[in-house]
Length: 241
Figure 1 (cartoon, rainbow, N blue to C red):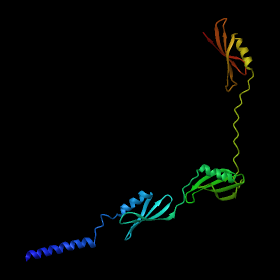
Figure 2: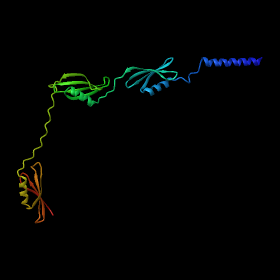
Figure 3: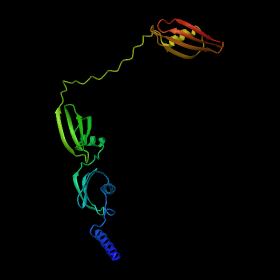
């Protein structure tokens, strides 16, 4: 009797366990965590996840890319993306370089470039040009070079006169030489009559002097003779052996 009761009790327990698995199947091993869903979105679409929430069937994941902000619905059971929605479009990145934007501005308006500034919010270049009478602000689209706006104002030239161009300094005038180079040579040859190898003028505060080098092959003598450029007198004589 006891054996029959024990078998009946065991059968009841087994039946309860079977009903538990049938009514409440274990799904955690097959489901996807929210962290796995976020990693999957970043791998699939790039960008960076900003916000993730869970509903009964889906993970709602918001993420940012260069071109906008998106909302993805990821199935919690199998990790598949059920939907993808663009929430907010971002302004496109600039395409034109600063040099190219300046070329567009100067093709539209004349003037010299005074300042160039890129504005990220509008994805445009603000370029300031100066002419003789006007200051101009040209707004150029960084996408295609379109002139988005032109603002002009008169320049008050009288209030800010241009600085006169600096005149080049005139070289200091040399003191007047009374005697010429040929005259200095003639005076030097009074000391040694030979062939002139070199003549050099040296400027000094009292008028300068000539250095005349003479070589006399007949006597095998050489001399460097210093002749004053104004007075014409022989100042020194250096003989070479």
